[in-house]
Image 1 (tube, rainbow, N blue to C red):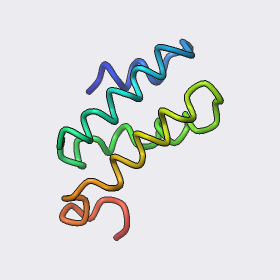
Image 2 (tube, rainbow, N blue to C red):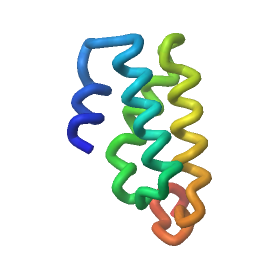
Image 3 (spheres, rainbow, N blue to C red):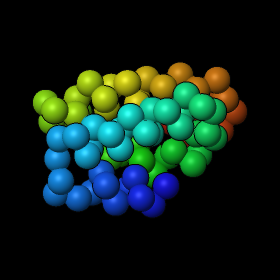
Image 4 (tube, rainbow, N blue to C red):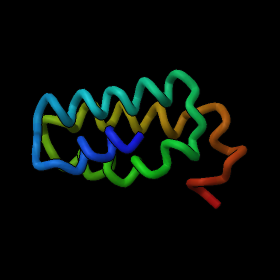
Length: 78
């Protein structure tokens, strides 16, 4: 998880950020517990502001927020 956070925090752009966001989406799709993805959510939202990462960020957010167990954790809408 720290690797993805590092990649999303770097000044590197384009494909590196896009691939990191796709990894976040894949982990959410795979079923990783939402509480483990929580530290990445702010960085994914920040990626919405960049044209080259917008689509990957939207995909990641959709997969995170549509996780079937999200309401069990109460992380995002308490």
